[in-house]
Amino acid sequence: MKQIIHIARKEFSDGLRNRWMLAISLLFAVLAVGIAWFGAAASGQVGFTSIPATIASLASLATFLMPLIALLLAYDAIVGEEEGGTLMLLLTYPLTRRELLLGKFVGHGCILGMATLIGFGSAAVAIALLVQDVSYSTLVFAFSRFIFSSTLLGLVFLAFAYVLSSQAKEKTTAAGLALGIWFLFVLVFDLALLALLVVTEGRISPELLPWLLLLNPTDIYRLINLGGFEAGGQGLGVMALANDLPVGQLVLWLCLVVWAAVILGLAHWRLAKRAA
Amino acid sequence: MTVVVELKQVQQSYGDLQVLHDMTWQLRAGEVMGLFGHNGAGKTTTVRLILGLIQASSGEVRVLGGEASESRVRQQIGFLPENVMFYPQLTGRETLQHFARLKGAPLAQVDELLAQVGLTAAATKRVKTYSKGMRQRLGLAQALLGQPKLLILDEPTVGLDPIATQELYRLIGRLKDAGTSIIICSHVLPGVESYIDRAVVLARGYLEAEGNLNQLRNQAGLPVQIRVQGLTSEFTHPEIHSQRQLTAQWLELSVTPAAKLDILREILKLQPQDLEVRPASLEDIYCYYMEKAGAVGIAGVQQ
Image 1 (cartoon, rainbow over the protein chains, first blue to last red):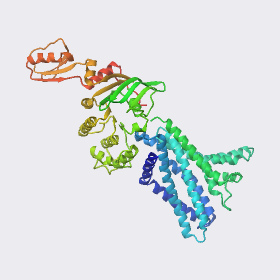
Image 2 (tube, chains in turn brown, cyan):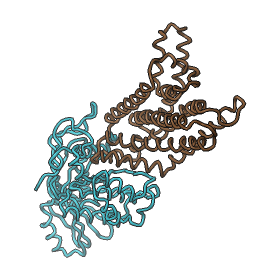
Image 3 (tube, helix red, strand yellow):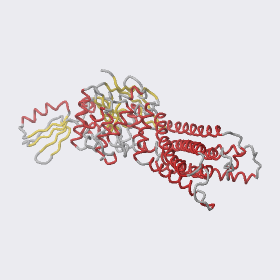
Image 4 (cartoon, rainbow over the protein chains, first blue to last red):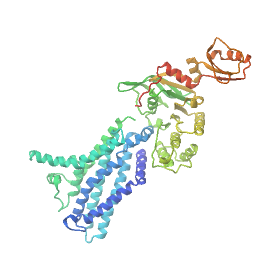
């Protein structure tokens, strides 16, 4: 346990020092404030519209950004240590591979969590201060749910990054694979699902299809954030399938946690197999 | 004396490739051992086995009375890898503090060690600004965290200037006196020669020779070189293997070690101007065993 904290502490201070955390926080804050005020510009409105609309726009954005940032943050976690010669050295220390991996996970997770909290939290504060007659309880509920689920989504992709990093022999390979994972889950999966719908012309059992969404953590994440609003429940594209999904929010959260745990387990398995 | 490292009939294979054959030797407390061999002879594999990074395919590796994978054992091992860049964005002091925490060594030791390796002035500079020699010093300080009972140094003098190299060997002497066992892997044979108690010579994955330098010299039967200046008459002796004329009236004789004193007495009778006697060096011994093993000019690939 102590070893996990030591590794996490080092990763966290790395994140502070190379200004990763500052950059992510700033990016999130600027984008969130921008979306809150100009998100409806396409429909001819400028200014804050509603909390559900803002969260929906923010969630679409975070679906792209969180996985990318998490993968960027951690793709070299293992292979980078090896290239620096420190992986072999660390493994001669009283430190297990599990502790090394969990330490990195906790450290990187804290960076992501803090940056998300600061970035999106400041947008929430700005809305609370600047917008008149906004419901504070809805604001706090929607934004805390959004911040927590975004962090959880980030954790899933951190775990993916460790799998790649434990597998790859070179940093550049890991970077390439990371991009591939991002492409697969953020872009290809939904398109493939839609294509499946069209090609099979509905011959697939309609009960089964919505469950396929649970195979993509980014879809689970969007379901979490789109649900629960009276007005915002109608999703677009594959999200429309979610209306047929007979599961509650809690199950969705649980699915995301399971994703993170399973992928982290996979990463540990790959790391354990890796030659020191 | 207590045995610190013990290898018993260790075999190691990577897939079909067997890289260590029947390796058996011991290292006792307070001994300094040199581990030598050509590239790919199995030095790195041997070190990895001792460090517990890999498990032997068969045979037994015991370190400090246990398995090298136990954390109790690991806490007492210091290791200087051949090539380590560390974390470029951390300072020298932060790097050592990080490793001290992981090893459970007192943080107060960090500044002592930085002073010991001459990095006090650079302690607050980031490691990315360090030269190769400075990183090597940092690596050495790292290896000394927690006062290890077993120290493994892989090419410790690479990148060090001559004075730092001498300091390193002096440090090794002090640690040895304090009871630390030390394994040095090096290709800089003349440097380590006078600091090692024992040598283990590997070639093609086999243990070629093991013992102190005198034992190895005798075992190899390598000749002693005698150089004489200003001999007035021809000199012959049945125990002279070969002789050649060098510059400035120097004559170099290769003689059987056992006949060395006898021949010297004969030479002194001829009143030479100057005399040098050089027993077979570690390098000669090394070359002898490499030739014997047919391992000249082969190089393996690092696994």
